[in-house]
Length: 295
Image 1 (spheres, rainbow, N blue to C red):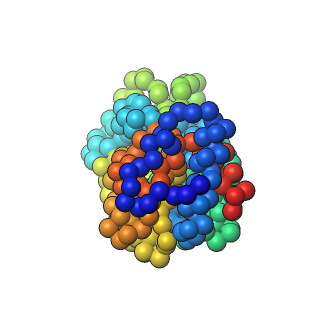
Image 2 (image 1 turned 90 degrees about the vertical axis):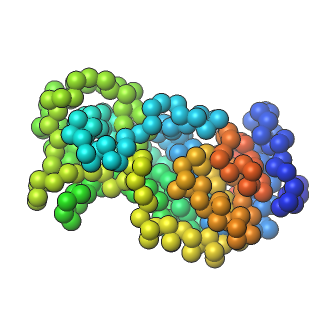
């Protein structure tokens, strides 16, 4: 199979819902050809990589919200009630991320790095599953959910320690159950007005997971690391992301500006569809496995 020229329209046939086997086979052959032509990649991953680990995603195949948008950074910092609701729901939702395990997609990307094809893996996920699967050169673009930071001093703490303190402060919440939501949230709707939020043991300041909340900015150093890697790469590969959030979409814009080919392996539309040189709509884990067999 040949790759389409950079100036040609996106291959619409690859977007059609065909049988899984043929879709995976076709996608793997084209992705392998892309990697052979552009052997050094910057890889950008999103929530679709972790759904097979049981972690829900925010958007559907059309890129639309499946639920209400996540907590807003400004609301979290300004409103005690928002923090009560966030931490109360997190008592139910955090264990899902804590207990999740890497799935085949994570391991296949780690193997792709081991074979020398990944300059840098930039993930929008906060679950650290890429690192647990063996990927070494990773930038957590949106931070990591397993660490807590004080917004008023330099205090940092493991998420589980804060989780246990929160349970001690709110024993009634041990009895609640709810469906898990993305990023350690849960679909819990109760009265949170009496919830006691754990604060910083050093300065009594506001504790927050070390993640970039909706409406906040990605630290400049992380963005620069990714841009440096993109400049040093032959191409950009997007895996499991709709790219609806600008923090990830920006790398496609830079890649196009710099003449770097862009491929995406994602079930559903992406914000960058008009910028892509190769669009593959197929199961991520199976496609990556078959791609490795072709290389």
